[in-house]
Structures are given as C-alpha cells and as structure tokens.
Length: 365
Picture 1 (cartoon, one colour):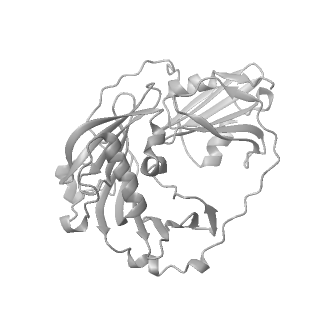
Picture 2 (cartoon, one colour):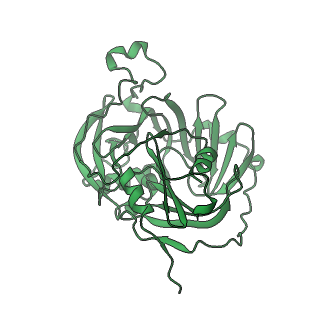
Picture 3 (tube, rainbow, N blue to C red):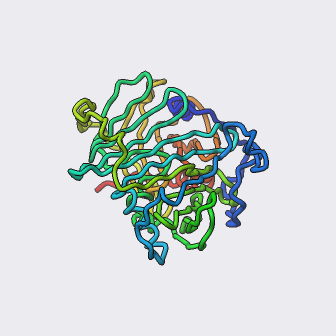
C-alpha cells in the first residue's frame, strides 16, 4: 500500500535502511542556516534561485498596530490581529535544502463594507492562485477547472492555525520568548515553539516589532538542524486595501462546491498513542486512485502538523515493511499479523513508529 500512497502524492523518497526508530531526541539548536546547497551571504550577489533574499522594507511601509506587547501570548495575539484586520502585502520565499526556493505573494484587504479578502499567489512557473472572499476560497491552478470551497482561511505554507488561532496550539506546544533580534535589518521578537512531549519538530518564529507580522519561520529537526525556512522579503501594511482587490469581479468567481456526506464505512480501529494536542480530524474508507486498493484512513492534526494513517489487510498489501524519508516527511509501513499500517506526516521517525505500533481494534460501544 505504501508505494501506492507515495505515488498518489507525487513525491519521491529515499529508503532508510535499518534506522533505529527508538532513538532518543536531542534538543540543541543549530544556527538557522540551510546546508551548503544555499549560498552564503558573501556570494549573495551571484546566487542561484535557492538564495533566501533579505527583507529591506522602508519604515513608512509599516503601521504600528500595538506598541506594547509584553508576553509571548501578547505577541501571538498581535499576529492574529494583524492578519485579520490589517491591509497588507507580503512577499515571502519558502526554502528547503536541495530544492529551488519557492516565492509567494500574499495580500489581505478589508473593504469599506467590511468584506475580508485575501490572495495567495505562487510566483514561479504557471503559478497557483487562491482568492478568499469572506468564508469562500477560490482556487486557480494549471490544467484544473477553477473551484471554490467554504473556508475561513487560505491553505498556504504558513500554518493557518498559527496565524489565526495560536492559542489552540498550546496543548501540544510551548511558546518560549527568546527576546529581541534582527531579521534582515528589522527589529524583531523571536519565539521558540517547542513540542511539549518532544515528539515533533520545533520552530523558530520571528515577528516584526512594529507590526507583529511574521518575518521568518524556521522548522528544526530534533537535533536543531534547519529543515525548512519561510523568509519574508517585502512587507507593506497600509491604510487602504490594495487596488488588486477592487479589480476582482466577485460574481465571476466559481460557486462553492456542495459537499455531500458520503456513506462510507467508518474505520473500526484507533491508535492508542498520539502526541500531545493531536486529535482526529477526519476518518473514512477510500479507494487509492492508482491501484484501486480500498484502505481505511484517518487524519490527525495538532494545528501545525497533519498525520495520515492508512490501514488495510496484509493480504491485500503490495509490499512489506519499509521506511521512506524526504526532507520533512516520514513514510512508515509496518505489518503486524493480518494488518498493514502506513503512517505519513512531517514528524520524526520514532513518532511515526510509536503511532503505527499503537494501532488497536476499536472497542464496541
């Protein structure tokens, strides 16, 4: 089953042979630099597309939203407030070692009638664009008919729960103030986001002192090595929404899709182990498009990380036990008796193993 799941997601992974899935964590942080695939600042003038550009906005581009935040909760509340209520335009890049840097443009505006509008545009290649008008998100991407879904948030590289409801993350993560710092020449407040049970990757978050907006977000592995970096390259917070929103013909946007309740058999199993703060958000039975295999599926989330679990009879499986790794993600398949379970998510290998080995039949109610 794992091969079909990997293929269906369009990802390639390297095989990890005989890795110790019970290895203990270490908590030291390394400098927030990607490996040598990203050039040093000394070579910035002649860099490849993987270089992380530096943010040099003018002071007049930023409106001071709340000049007196004190605690990490205050700073996170200010972040939540600015992304909901302010008119802004943010350009940022997403970087991972060994991959091309991906640039995005993110806008938000509040119109005179109170309409909340948002845009997230992928700037490379043929592009992908999402436009939100109040609680409806329209998606435009190559070779796919435009469609709309009901959602209060756009799904982008920066976790929406961090932006809009950071308080919901506190059952799974601890927020630790590091103090003042500078990010690309701007004063910033640095906050560490640490898994309470050391079962997930940690984060470094830098917020602009003037506005509260995200300036940089690093994801770190268990040894403190940098896995992913989101770096803002330009920031404008203005009194009026960008003219872009006035040019959108809201009537021409696709109507939201009507979601029907499928009468599928609910999985009759559960996992006994989950990281702190992680809850089941979805569960059903589905057929994998590439192979036609029927698998039982559940998704779990803590607000920052989603974990998918697939279960099927071992006799129907296409392969045996296997571990695949790709940057942030772990794909783990284990067979126990008559059942094969696959765990997929941006989590450490030992956490995926703990979830997989805790599979248990659900008790009858």
